[in-house]
Amino acid sequence: MVMVFEFELRCPITADLGLIRDLVRLHGRHSGLSERRLEDLVLAVNEAVTNVLDHGGKAGVVTARAERGQVVVDILDFAGLLTHDHLASAGLDHTASHGYGLWVIQNLCDEVVLERTEHGSLLSLRVRERHPAGSGDRHSAGNHDQLDGWHDDDWHDDDQRQPASH
Image 1: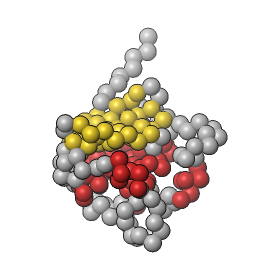
Image 2: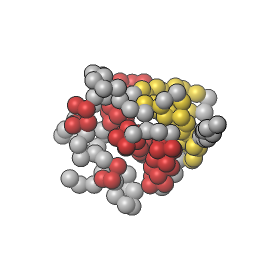
Image 3: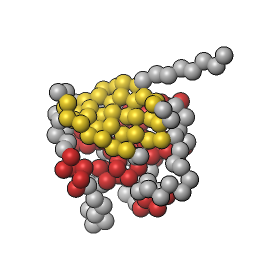
């Protein structure tokens, strides 16, 4: 008999982005994500939490769980300021020094869903264990080429929520 232990990660959003990344990485690895998908998820969560800290009410909760071959991470922002218009207008402006977060999130995750709840804005990020070969969707390797240089280890050790210089 094989025992499978499933668990849910739940932690408050704090300025300790390193801890949040480590917890999400541990959960994703335990849930069976490939290294590439794991790093996609960690970076996307880092961006979402950074947005809560920079633009939201500075308070919220990160919850992660494994679900049918994927990992789902919910970022609840108690301020509830994130809207569907923000997601729809997210783009990649090569002349800007910041503002890539929502674009990065949408291009690294297999599905991004925003819900308005009585507790605030709930952003759900879904990442499959592995990309299907030749999937041809917007999450193919081509978009990773645009993200070269934006990796989890590019964040300063002091976690001031700014990417390192390239």
